[in-house]
Length: 239
Image 1 (cartoon, rainbow, N blue to C red):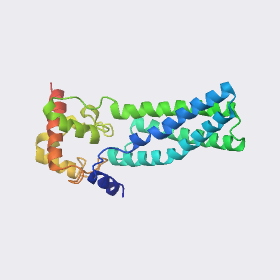
Image 2: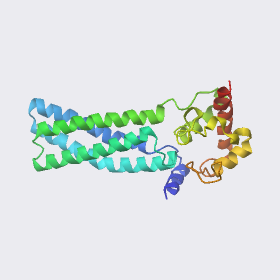
Image 3: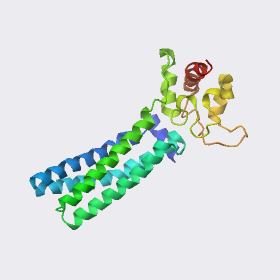
C-alpha cells in the first residue's frame, strides 16, 4: 500500500519524501505558540494567551499527519532501519505528543489563562522540536554522500535519495560487516542491477535492503548510480 502511494506520487512528478515538507507545520506552530505565550505573559494579554493556546492545538493536529508521513518515509527510504537519528526522532516525537496533549488539556480546563503553566509547555515543546530538527538534519545532511565530478552528479543524487541513509560514505549502518564500497556486486553492472532488483544476503536470505523494481529505479538510473558508486565511493576507498 505504501509503495502504491509513492508510485502514484512518482507518476505525477513528486519524487521526494513527504515528511520533511510536513515538519514545517508543527514546528512553525510550536514556535508561534511560544512567541505568543511569552508575549501574553509579559504584557498580560488574555487575547494573546488564547491565540497561543489555539496555535498549540493546531500544532497537535498537524503532529498526526507529520508523524504518519514520517513513518511512511522511514519504511520507503530507509526500509524501517533503526538508525540512531531515527531512534531519537521517534523518541522526541513521542515526547512532543505528550507535551502538546498536556498543553491542550491544561488550556482547555483553565480557558488558556494559566499562562505560567502553558509557557512552560511552550518552552519544552520548542526545545523538543529543535531536537527533532537537529536529528532530521543529521539524517538528511550528515555528509553521507561524498561529492564527485560533475559527470557522476545524477548518480550522486540518486545515492543521496535512496542509499545514503544506510550506506553513508559507502559503509553499511545496518550490517557493518557488509559495506557497500567492497561489495562483490560492484564487479560488473549486470550483477549490480540484479542485486538491487532482488537484494539477498550472502546466505541467500532476504536482508533489510528493499528491492528497487524498474518502477522505482529505472535501468538508466541504476547505471548512473553504479557509475557514481564505482567511481566516487569504491575507487577512493582502495587508495
